[in-house]
Image 1 (tube, rainbow, N blue to C red):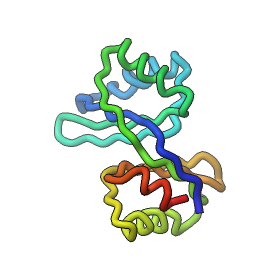
Image 2: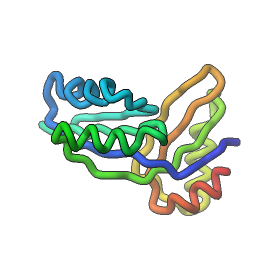
Image 3: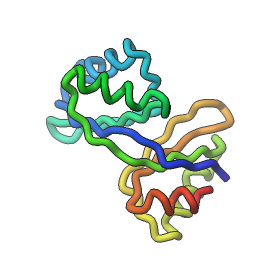
Image 4: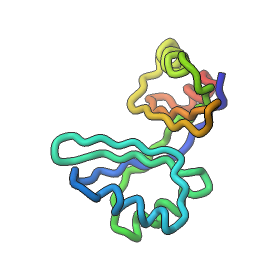
Length: 133
């Protein structure tokens, strides 16, 4: 169904306040870091922001974050390309579940009308890549 790879991203814990996303993302834009996918959510007074850059921009993203005093945790993720049509998320998650792989985080990024890329943090990333193809 899809092409899958292990890819890198970061989790940033930030205060839940107006403008903080712009403060983090603007320096990345100025450094010409292409963000392939991002996901965020608030929990109380704090928020979590997940960033996945294009592979060639990963080191540049880390350098820019450090230069701007942004703390982060590096993440290993499974990225899988899927057709942009009904049932693809169900296929990917069921496939992982049936193989005994636990999904800890997930989000996606649609990049064309025909394709989407889903990202999973799992307890067995290498096995997940093999299972998803």
